Length: 193
Image 1 (tube, rainbow, N blue to C red):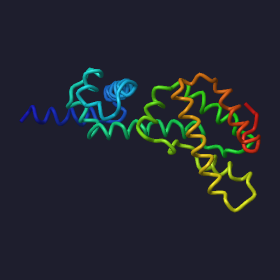
Image 2 (image 1 turned 90 degrees about the vertical axis):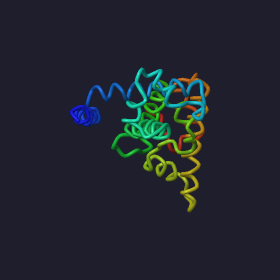
Image 3 (image 1 turned 180 degrees about the vertical axis):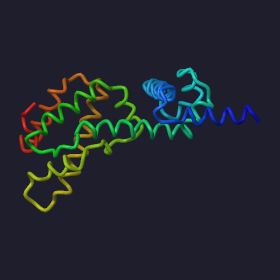
Image 4 (image 1 turned 180 degrees about the horizontal axis):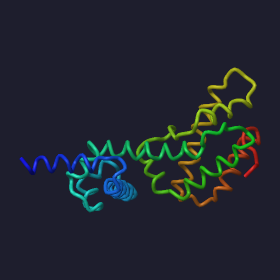
């Protein structure tokens, strides 16, 4: 009975979100997952592989995630939150779009394995681009088909980012911004970066 009470208390302490030990464990799990996805498809990875690389036991994994899909979802959500944070709370407009997109490209280049993971997990076309950015893209088309321009921009930007990441991000973030700038003929992206 004493052992049961101790293990329940330990589990409640470990699951406190700001617990440094738990944060370290989550980092190990996420790092192992991303490392495995660089060389394997998702259906080739199992919890035992992750635990072996992370240096944890299966019980620890299951204290943090229901299953492998739960881990994959958590990783995608983490990346999406980071991307949206890059755009910040400011209103995206033509005047600041270049610097915001340059920040995004820089972040992607610095975190290539995570972005490869993101696309490998099938998030194509769902790359997190704030609605304000997409709406800004459609402002420069004087017609009633704004929603089509928005989707074109969203999926086009996502496809360009995926191609860049899968190619090893050989172009600089500045070159990627120039590609977008040329594609949109200076309509929506200012050369402010």
